[in-house]
Image (tube, rainbow, N blue to C red; front, side, top):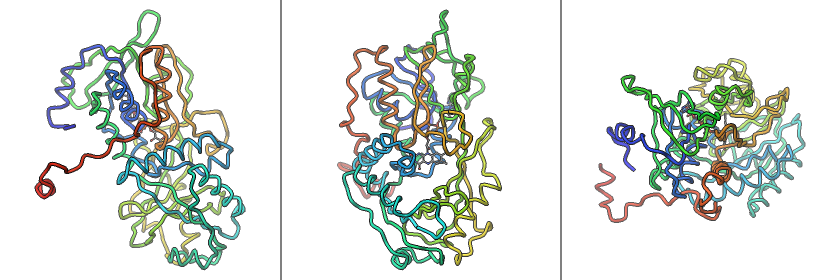
Length: 419
Ligand SMILES: Cc1cc2nc3c(=O)[nH]c(=O)nc-3n(C[C@H](O)[C@H](O)[C@H](O)COP(=O)(O)OP(=O)(O)OC[C@H]3O[C@@H](n4cnc5c(N)ncnc54)[C@H](O)[C@@H]3O)c2cc1C
C-alpha cells in the first residue's frame, strides 16, 4: 500500500458510497477490526481523528504478554487467551514481535512470597506449552544483571514474554487491512452519528481535520463500530447513555541506557504498595512503568504527574541504589489512557482489564482489553455483526494473525537499500 500525498484526497472523493462497515478510531482495536473485516470481504472504512495510533496504542509498555498479574486476580481465561495470541504473534510477526527475557527480582520486604510468583510462572509457561522460567539465587541474579546492587536482593526468576513497537503494529494491521481491500483515512473526525427515525445508527458525519475548507460529509454504512478507546463514551453519551468508561492513566519514565545498561527487562514489586513495576530496554532507552491513576481531562494530551514520576523513580532507586538515578536522569516521559470499563471499585488497579463489546441503537462499541488481544476483540466484534452480515465466512483463529512481511525477492536488494 502506498500512502502518498494524494491518497487522502482520492479517498475523500470516493467516500460517498454505502459502506458495509465504518470503524471509528485508528488505534490497535480499530486497525485489528479493519484487517479482519476487509479480509472477510466487507467494504470497510476506518476513520481516525488524528495520526494513526496517536491515542493509547503508541503509549503502552510495548509488551505482547499474557498478563501475569491477571493470573493473580483469577482471570485464568484472559491470561490463557493472551498467551495464545502472544505465541501466534511471535511466530508470525517475527521482527515486529520479539521474545523478551525478564528477571523478576525478589527483595526483602516484598508483599508477595517469591514461591507464589514461581507458581504463577509455572502456570504461565504451561499455558504456552513451554518451560522457560527458572529460579536463581541472589548471586546468580547479580551476575545476570550486573547493575543490580541492592543488599535487599533475595533471588528471583527468569522468564520470557514478548515486545513490540506498538505504533508500528497498528500501522502493519492497517496496511494489511488496505491490502485486503479496506480503506483507512486519518485526520478525519466523526463529529456526529447519523440516525434513522427509530434512532438506529446508520452512518457518521465526518470532518476533515487537515482541511477546514472541506465541508462536513455524511457517510452511510450498514454497521458502525465505535473503537475510540478511552474516548468511547463521547460518541455514546451523545445519545444520552450513561458513561461506562473509567479512563485510567498509566505513565512511563524514559531513562538513558547508558545510565542503566540493562540487557533484559526487570520486574519487581513496588516497595510502597506491591504494585508491579517494569524496567524495559527498548530502542536504546529504558522504559520504567507504570502507574494507575484516574484521569478526567480528556481534551488534552495526558501527562505524568509529579507524584507518578516520584513513585516510578522510587522503584528504580530501590533496586539500583548504586546507580544513583535521580530526576535529572529522566530523558522523557509519556502517558496513555487505559480504556477500562468501570465497575465502581475504589482502587483503579482493581478494575478488570478485560475488553467489552456492546450494542446500543445500532452502534457497536468495542473497548477495553490490551494491545496483545486485538484479534480476539476483532473476532468478537464481527461475531456481534453476524446478524447484519449473515454470509460472513467463519472467524478462524488458525488463519495467520499477520501476513509475512514483503521480501526483497525479485528486487535489486542493493538498490532498494540505497534508495
Ligand atoms: C500505560 C499503558 C501501558 C500499557 N501496556 C500494554 C502492554 O504492554 N501490552 C498490552 O497488550 N497492552 C497494554 N496496554 C493496553 C493497550 O495499550 C490499550 O488497551 C490499547 O492500546 C487501546 O487501543 P484502542 O485502539 O482501543 O484505543 P486508542 O489507541 O486510544 O485508539 C482510539 C483512537 O480513536 C481516535 N478517536 C477518538 N475519537 C474519535 C472520533 N470522534 N473520530 C475519529 N477518531 C477518534 C483517537 O484519536 C485514537 O487514536 C497499556 C495501556 C496503558 C495505558
